Image (cartoon, rainbow, N blue to C red; front, side, top):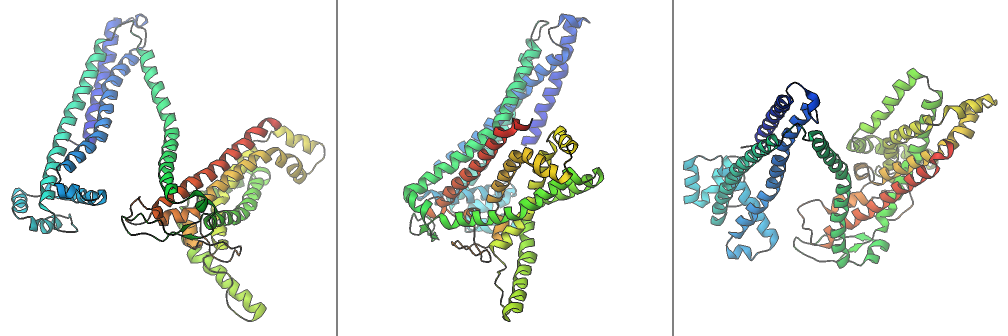
Length: 494
């Protein structure tokens, strides 16, 4: 039985429980609802909650625990010579067993018998069913795949029985406790409060999980490579090791990547801040209502464009344009039409990233400027100041803390950008100050270190987690400082 169908059955039991619970509450009231502690709907909701919530919890626990148990049981049945191999080889074998199991489910009985009689035909038969295998399966793989299917089917059957029985038991229990003085509303609202607390905790728990996972692997990296070599190294040359190797040869200097990240982000902010801030001033102070209603949504459309599209734009349009423009300028000045701006460069990536950040700056700044009290504007204009003087001497100083916070949050967005840098700035990790040459960032190297079939056992792959935790700390500090500025000066002009 599929999970979706099982959830549908639980939902039907819950709806039936709601109707039966409400009916029983009305019957106990005898037409006098004032004799009930809660409205009939709360009694029905109480029955529905007890019908669905325990069943869903059992379903979730089973979904998590069952694959773990089945996998450990199947692996325990491996031959001793297979158990003696590395964990990576056992994982590859289990993946092939899973693929064979999927193929066995769609085979006719005679095809299954042919495979088990002659294992050499398994690869051909399964490939004909759309399950290609990299090699001929070993005999133990066929037996394990059959065992995997049988356990999975048994688990699915038992899951359906247990979940349905749990839902019915919850409905019967909650139905029996219904009484006129039963505090159904308090119980239902208590469950809803727990649900709201759980929902609000998801973001916190997710952040804690992300940090814990990165920090754990980063510690493994620093056990192999000294921290001072990583944080103060000036050469990035990881030298990928072979699969299964723990070779720590190579240089893992963070400085070139950090320099590229800050340099490209700085160029992007040089583009985004003036354009975005001036656009916000125009829309909040000068534009008519009609113009604002059209311009603001059109400007914010830029925020909805995928970053890979900006990368294509930089690679196909902006980069070649800057390269050809530099060649023309060089020809006019020196007569040599060699370009001094490369198609992939800090300037290209920073310019396109700045375009992407414009709606963040303008939207946040517009909201902050609009929130400045109207009395400050009227007082300045009433004293004889012009509109431009009011903006420069009254509105912008009043909105400055919020604008600075918005710019810092935008900077943290720029630091974490990946796709634009990959296509517009290249992957060269080096330290230089020429904006017309390529550089790379921390995020690009995180992607490159984790691309391909790699094991998380060598410094060449574990370094990605050290880079990730470093980038997380940088963006976290920017966001904390932005919130500090906003909160410190928020009440100064209220």
